[in-house]
Image (cartoon, rainbow, N blue to C red; front, side, top):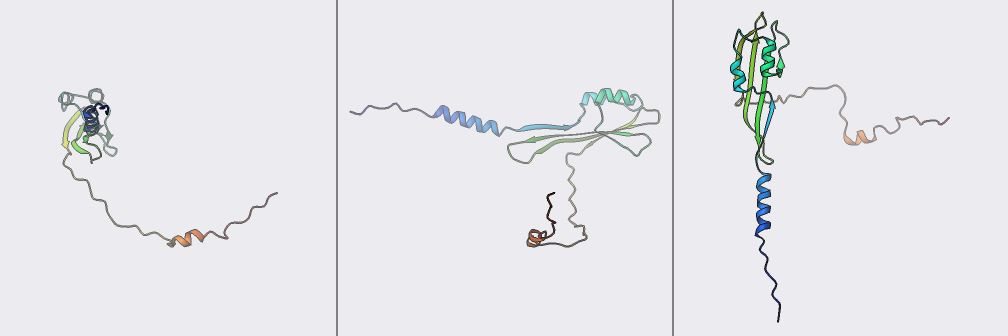
Length: 153
C-alpha cells in the first residue's frame, strides 16, 4: 500500500505574497519646499508683522527677490503622490509671496495655487558651434602619431 502524504494548502504563502505586492504599490507622498500651514498664514497680516516675526512664524523663505528695494519673500512648496513606478501626481503646488514696505512690515500677502500650471516646453533650436565634425573612425585613429615618445633619463 502506498502511504498518503498530507496535502499542504499554499494559502498562507499566497496571502503573504499578495500582501507584499499590495504594500509595494502603496502610494508615497513627498513634500518638497515650504508650504506654510493655514493657521500660520492667518497670523500674517499687512501692516502688523516685521520680517523677523514672519521668519519666526513661517520659517526662512524659499527665495528672496534680489533686484527690488524692499525684498519680496517667496515660500514655494509642492506635495506629490507616487504609486510604484508611475509618474508622480502633483497634489498641491503653492507659492506664497510676501512683500514688505519701507518700514520693514508686511505690506502685501499673495497666495498662488500653481498646481495646474503647465511646464514650459523646451526650445528645440541648436546653437551652432565652430570647428569640424569628426566621424567615429576619424576620432579613433585621429591621434595616431600625435604623441611624442617619452625619453627615459
